[in-house]
Image 1 (cartoon, one colour):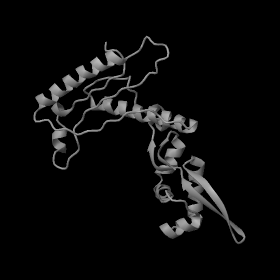
Image 2: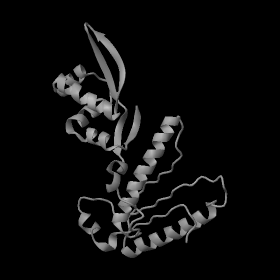
Image 3: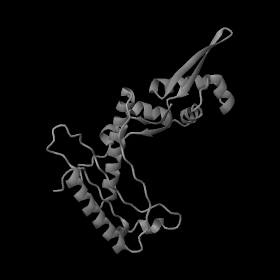
Length: 216
């Protein structure tokens, strides 16, 4: 079982978003049959079988083994992953396009960039998993506090300059065998119980997004 799996088709997304099927999928982090799931969840076995077939067709549940129980065959299945992420690819033409309205200071553009990140990394991870190879990535997640809006603006400017210098230093655009990588940096207010209203003011919205290309 994988830790996280990407869902790229609308059909699979629909199957997983059904409340009962989502409940069964969570229970199937451990192998189970319709009978054992009925005991765990209190649902009728016939209903469970119906939903399990739908989840198998969606590709998020797989057969572990078949056991003979008297005159019957018990199918033991398990979820393909412990958790799932629905790719914007499942939305087809409704998925956001980062190229439509690029704006470094727009939260909407940040969401479009984040959606592309989910889609692209999900696709790369699926390919790497199928090939039995690791996927080389780097993720940094941190929280910091700015005393003033001026401090935040200074941080954004200094970070942008530092990243531009690093991109210029390491970008090998002239090398035919160089492998393209995408670099994304985003900064947004943290969600807090008391400070959410402050996060909505225009002065607190700052985003920095950069491709790993030479600055223009």
